[in-house]
Amino acid sequence: MSKRPTPKKRREKSRGRTQFGVYMQSEVRRLTNKLNSPYAPVAESKGKVEKALKGITRIKA
View: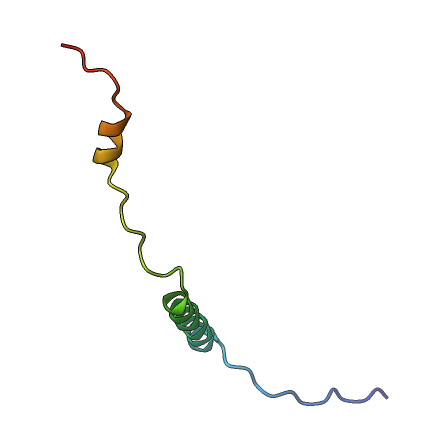
């Protein structure tokens, strides 16, 4: 006679909530790391209008 299999713990039907919790945890961590990074602030604009005016060498009448 063969041995009976060892009884396993019953797993819940849906693991959705725990998976979502883990995802949210990693997402929050990622965003806080991004905020604390030295590259986080938005780069200031470099005055494209002034640069365009500098590029003009001749004005046609």
